[in-house]
Image (cartoon, rainbow, N blue to C red; front, side, top):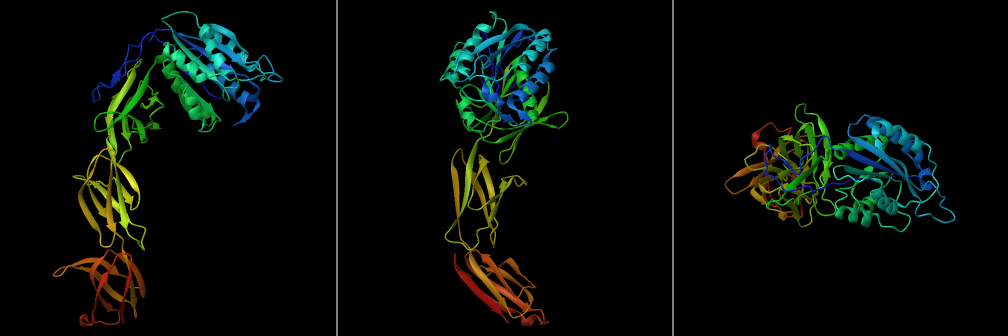
Length: 467
């Protein structure tokens, strides 16, 4: 089952990107709050609506949800509704009737028509096939001619076209004639594969349960009645909105409450996807890049296509071990230069995306490796290679105390404390020259300290003994 919302307008929406500030995030034509909106419901009553979904069979769940929805909008000002059904007059066997589509309830104010539409939907019995393209094409004649009215189509179905028609071609043709601004496709009980099937018709939502359905309907009605939409442009280093696939959290600025969480997406045309937000709130947006980006005090203007530009140029960092290593579990601490915060701890061997800039990287080997001013560039991968560790086995005659130091000639640098309890111990060290100092617990004289010099080679094993 899905809903397709489309709009008719006399002028194209201007989507020119505005300057990046919190006072001017909008573009588009002026919204007329007194303009009449007409919503045509196209309801699927094909035989497949007898299938199961959530709390019951599809037709019963759809009737229940539609009844609740119609009750919720019956007092809406400047709104008229109508109902077209398909697949409800002719059985799909032995021959499909691919013109089984009829305007059941003509347009009238929602206050009077909501009960009529609800009663007609509740009396439907699934019988026929699914002529989506034909019904979508026929609906154009259902709207009274009036250039000052916004026309909205809501198509409700539980599956794809069954009559050989091309709903996407019909939708595109109507959009090219400026009849549809942008359709919405809301799938109920469908898997993600249907996103590609319906994506060419409009924006696809996968609604998995009744609660999600109500929330999506509320958001879509905001756009249907006010034509208010939002587009977040995540700009690269050249100010083009090509960055994507990152989560955005929208907070209500005054309360700090989370209102929406969306994974940023580029649509089928390669443009940032359109969102529907409550236009009566002021927002703080957190874009969960590494490190995160915060935009505060963002206002949405009703009746316009709002564009929010956010500079988010990103590149990649990959840290690799060179050669066979006995220790695969190595991590890196990533810090942005001139910042005390640690935006990420990255596992060696993985690639992560970061905002363009310079970082200090501390690789948590033994001893630790500190690399400064590592640069991340737009859409490129900076690969850092470090030698694989070697394995050191410490064999002790009995428990005691000791440490391991990096031997730098005239300087010893501490790197590791030997366990005072375990008799035998294995640690992984970076290649280099080392010294180990050890004293048995039973030896209470400093002169009893035992020293061992050794060399660690990448990927190889060594051992030292203390008796």
